[in-house]
Amino acid sequence: MTPLPLTAGLGLKPQHYDEALHCTAPGLWWEVHPENYLADGGPRLAWLEAIRGQHPVALHGVSLSLAADAPPDEAHLARLAALARRIEPVLVSEHLAWSTWRGQYLPDLLPFPRTHAALQRIADNIARTQDALQRPIAIENPTHYLHIDGHDWAETDFLAELVQRTGCSLLLDINNVYISANNMGFSAQAYLDAFPLHAVAEIHMAGHHADPVHGNALLIDSHDATVAPAVWALYERVIARTGPIPTLIERDDKLPSLNELLAERDQAHRVLASATHEEAMCS
Picture 1 (cartoon, rainbow, N blue to C red):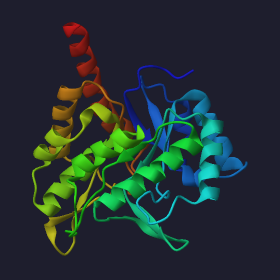
Picture 2 (picture 1 turned 90 degrees about the vertical axis):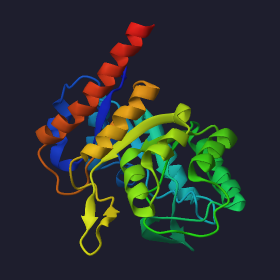
Picture 3 (picture 1 turned 120 degrees about the vertical axis):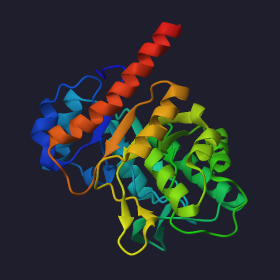
Picture 4 (picture 1 turned 180 degrees about the vertical axis):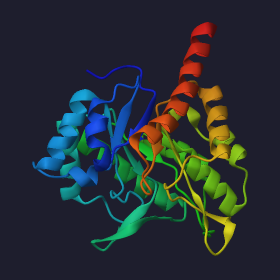
């Protein structure tokens, strides 16, 4: 029942449920955080199942804590697997980060040194997750705000090695790249040139804002604004190289009307449709 091909999607919010259910934009799909739906029943799960009956849905996790010094919580992983069986998502994704410490969940996606030991640990955790879900997952590149010592791997090489070892795919968040490049002083374009684009199954786009104290020297991945023109420019260069890849517009705060979000989503849809046309002309 999944319409093909997927083009551009939106993060699904309760405020927009009724409109989202009946939206007919071509190629549209929706993404949710599965942590909000890990229940055996109830109105929220019924709401998600209704959406899934009309549109493709992706699950974008925020709490598996794949970079932690312990395996993912078995009970949480079992609930996630049950939800995936129930919803049959088009994609499941998670972050290259950690968020648990000795049984406590922390309200952030935290960085780590990209060491050889971390690579093996994360690869093992991805493998456990994929075994539980019986499907590959996509791993998202993180946002960076400070320098951490002790890296053995460049981030793009680290991600490529995870793909090689586990068979996972990647979620390329271009806003994360832009923010990290600004905050850490490297070239966003050079990072994307080195990124293993062949493994990208999904792209994220979002807005950001400048830190109130440090200004543009420190950008915050706030998801509370429209996508910046510079991020759109990076996106168009990526799609020109890769061809169309399902793309999500993320908005988690200062939510506008669904019509405003759809207008931004349509911008990504047009980029993807143009890339599809160019591929067809060249084939």
